[in-house]
Image 1 (cartoon, rainbow, N blue to C red):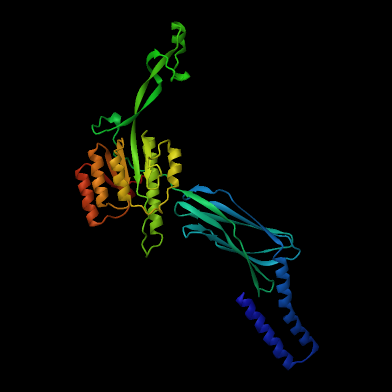
Image 2 (cartoon, rainbow, N blue to C red):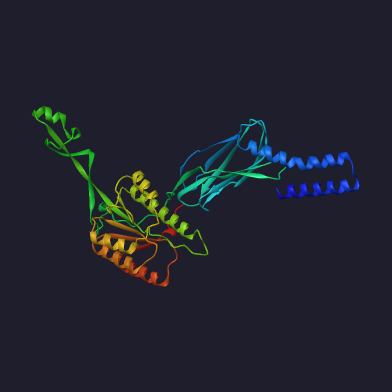
Amino acid sequence: MLKNRLTYGVVLVALILLIFLYEDGITYMALYVVLVLPLLSFGLTAVSRRQFSVQESLNRDNVVKGEVVQYTFNVKNNSFLPYTSVRVRFKASSAAVTADFTDKFFSIGPYKNHEIEFNVSAKYRGNYEIGVENIMLYDFLGLFRFEQKHGHAFILTVRPRVLDIAALPLSKADSGTQNVKNFTSEEDYAVVSDLRKYQPTDGYKKIHWKASAKKNELISKNFQNTKRNSVVLLLDNSEIEGDKKDEDAAAAMEDLMMEAYVSTLSYCARQMFSCSLYFIGDEQNEGAGGGFDYLYTIASKIAFAGQDVFDAYLMAYSKMQEDADNVLIFAQEISDALFATAQTLSLFGNSVIVLYFRDLRDDETKKIAGLGDMGIAAIDFRRMFMG
């Protein structure tokens, strides 16, 4: 636009000089035309700017990190006047969101429409606001611009990836390990252990119909119990302090911890462990037990904005003396409180594993060595990727 204004100024000055050198009707007419054209261009653009409509869509609003979504923006010209130059500017609420381009220039003829498609992805998991920041209309001379604010936006939810990780040293009830503390019992409906009289609490599935017909009374089946191990995943989701020199360091750390959390959850679920999630902000502080899909949905929504201290939360958990074979602690740092709590949980008969996600300080390295002396595993998650 600056270039157009400079060009217009040069033409106007040249015509004024031409009048002094060659005063004639045609030179005056050229000057009047040059003076009137900007007013005409401004007026036509001011009128036509109110004659367009916008439609937009997002093909998916819930994806896994790394997946690309398509944000479509359609502008329609409902006027007989053309839009000679239109600029649409894409916006995102975070620098973690990337698009294949941010600005798009185009023209729209009378009663035509123009569709733009932005390919959008995010570097980290989270909720992001995406949309169009504004629409800029330029007159046909390129001297004036009219900004159209666009307040509507979509919320894109990006869930953490589930990665393949190396095996974890978990205790299992069927492995002969001596320090297994507790397991949940389930019935294997394929194996009948014995028969007994029917109880009012028995369901129809337990009734042995052939035996009931022979004895002329309801007979129930006892199914063989199967052992199922348990694991508790304790996450330090307190607010992460980022490095001032690297603004997205905190976001990257949070993203890595959440990938570790859901990837470990997936590994434990595949190993047939009964899993419970514990994290700051869990209102009941009783964890959440269930299948992987259910737990993954809960984990994907965990926020790291809390002001609570994880050390206090961890110590409170140890005092509850929960019945769990395995306790996995996802730690931001190896603090004195974590060191003491891990030892306490181990003394209670739990198999404790501490996972960390950054290079350790000297004092943290000493604590890791101390945990190892007690048989407590400490693992750098960054070395656990299998692919």
